[in-house]
Each structure stands twice: as structure tokens, then as C-alpha cells.
Length: 225
Image (cartoon, rainbow, N blue to C red; front, side, top):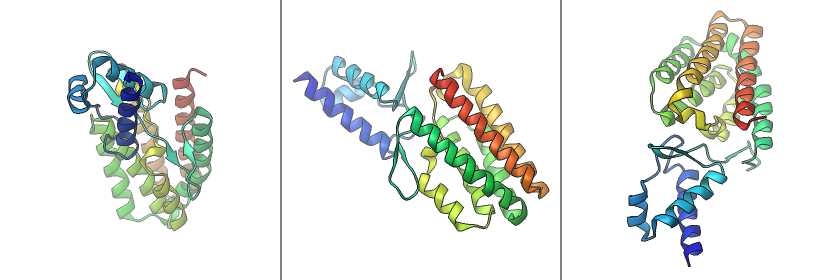
């Protein structure tokens, strides 16, 4: 009986995370709220959270609660889930190839409006304290670079991937490591913006490649490999 209750709670929370009702970086309802909503025991709630942690959908921080991580995403046109570390590596390889070229094209095709939108997304990213909102601004920057390329296929690719292409690692939710990570990502983004603004396609492609390569390294670091 308890197993059925746990499974039902897992399925409910999983669905809310995957469809965005609980956004990446947002706190899950408290134990007492889940107990009241679902009519289950504290043990059932804790077992459900443990299962979601094992799936990589939830990160629990002592004294602060449990937070949603980035749910599985889909690759362009294929409906391909991105759940495992290897699949995330493959997604990063795809992004490096596509977004480096998009940045190169953006360096010669961008408008003043594109530059302003990129700069605004970076400013909001640096100032944002909520992880879920920072993730949205991170994606907004990459989407705007694609838009600045002038090629709608780059835009379609990023739009189909959506914000889930930006990983929400547990470190982004931990006070000890979030600030340093945000600072590094912001600096890498600003290097891309500077090269695009300068109209240098080779530098723009190199800056985007470096940023995404560093992101891949952070992914490996998170996985302990």
C-alpha cells in the first residue's frame, strides 16, 4: 500500500517538474504541504523525494528543502530525451557545433537591437538571485545570439530545445558554489557579446566554443568524472 502511495506521489511531482509547473531551481512544496495535499505519511513523502533525487530531478539542501533540477529535454525534431550523462554530453557536442556557427554569423548580421537584447539578458542574469530566473536569462542570451545570426534554422533549433538545454546542476542551488559559477558563466557570455559587437566572426565562434566547452567541463566536474 505504501509503495503505491509513494509511486503516485512520485508521478505527480515528476509531471509537475517536467511540464514546468515547478520550474528548475524552484522549491518543491514542503513535507507538511505534500502530506496534507496527498493524504500520505512523512515516510511516503521522503521516499518519493529520494526517488526523484535518484532520477536527477530533485536536489535537497539541508535546512532549505528540495528543489527542482532541469527536467529531460528533447533534441530538435526527434523527441529525443536527455536524461543520462552521456546524453547530456551529446547535447553539449550538438550545441558547440551549432551555437559556435550561430555566433560567427551573428558577428556580421547582428543589429543594435540584438546587441541591446544580449546585454540586457546578461545584466539580468548577473543580478538575478533566483536560480530558475537566472536559467531563463541564460537561455535568453543564447536564443538572442541565434536570432542575431539571421538564420531562422538556428533559432528553431534553440527554441525546440528550450530552456532545458541549460543544465540546472545542484551547485547552482548551493550557496557555496552558486556565486562563483554565475560569475564565470557571465564572464564567458560577455566575451561572446564583445566579439559579436566587434564584428569578428572568428572571435565570436571561439568565445562561444570556449563557453560551451567550459560548460561541458562543469558538467563533467558535477558528475565526478
